Length: 173
Image 1: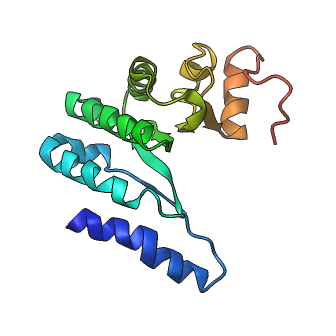
Image 2: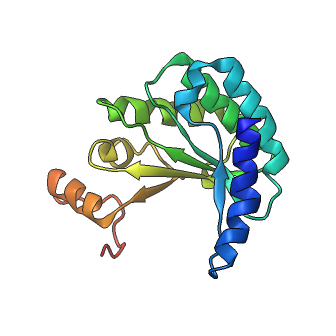
């Protein structure tokens, strides 16, 4: 009941409240990877998400990803990807907050590629920063995936890579 109420607030209450101020409220839906260590609970939450996916303010499934790179988190990530594929939803991936962010990012990208149920153009990778940017740029892990990279992080990459930009021609601000 708790997550059902939470998703109702995100998809009904908050849009109405925001509209009072001329703001269009949009949201992504998922269960946080930290909750994946209780697989039964995580599955129960994932199972109620489809009820909310047709709401006009829902952008897709996200932010999904990993926290501690556990087996349960990977299974949770795979379940979210399958849900997105089954309902033709966009996916927003949050790279992990870890000491080894690079490893977590690599695991996520491997899962996206191996799973293969969600088209790369339907996936946004968020929180690409100095800890994992080389995984995207040098390893070309993202391929057709959209990566959210700030101009500051791009400048940091360029300064550490001998001046090579991984998006030549793009006007960074």
